[in-house]
Length: 468
Ligand SMILES: [Zn+2]
Image (tube, rainbow, N blue to C red; front, top):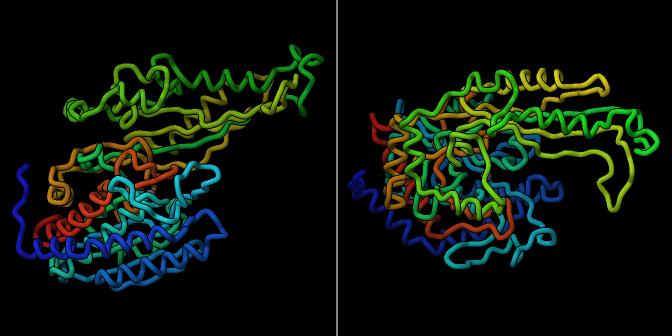
């Protein structure tokens, strides 16, 4: 792909960005100083102050903004109307962060007092998602100052509950469906494929969680006096869980693969071309050997094949020393990652039926279904995706690669279900930014590239007849 020609107005936006570098960096530091930990009720005031700060930045960017109170934390929503009948873009991000307890996690400094180390800002939320959100807002400000994309209806939604499940987002989006309607949703809450290799994520796995509870005797028994005459729930559970896997890394639940869309040759070829080393991946995870479904590469296993994973097993005595007990109960927490076109509800039913069919008469088995989310596969041949590709090429100096992600991003489903709109996931961060972990960081170069990308996207989408 040839890098697109830059217009004089776009150059104006670019110089606005370079001339304000120090100011934008200071803004990023201010943003990061709010301990906006959405899961911590003691931080409610900090979260609210952070929302207020975001409102100011959005107003400064040229948007008409409102702070929407919710049962949880406020949603900040801003708009800039375009030409009547013009295209609309919805930008999404979040200002809340994961907890950062330096006494449990080895932070080198106060997680809410940002410092710069080797060209990156280090603080909780640097990459997930404050750095990325602010890059978009600064990009919007630069674009509007330069008069780019005047036809485009710009809609920006920054929520404060992403890290706790976005409980208030779905009701808000359904209620404001008409107002939020857009040709494309842009989300910057993911990563590039590697340093210097920007990516658009076009696929996400879905999820279904369930819990298996096996109950045996009415209370824990002496394993000497009773063992051998009463079935052990831990053993029963272990057999049942093991029976959910078939040889060669496959899942044994009947019907599990019926709706799985096979990878086509072209996509497999694209994945194969990505710079990825099995050896480095193995070193990164530290497992003695890699494992997975036969016939698929590591990236295919993580992105495009479904799984059945044990997240937790609890039974009997797990404390210090030995205790010769025959436990009354055993529990397993399971998550299944789903791929198109598996349906979480159907998979939940198939899994429950199969697990129940494995239950011996000597124990009572309960299967509890928890939350689910559909897998996502976005069309890559739309005008909006092409515009995003070109914008990234301008911002990062090279075209993005197309990747999938093994995890689930529930807001993508929210926008799809409520608005019928696909999300374009532009990752500004790096895979090793350490989101949710200690010493989270975000490259200041990527911060600037993100601003330029956003300004370029507004110009691209704002031209009548393009981008949708
Ligand atoms: Zn995030």
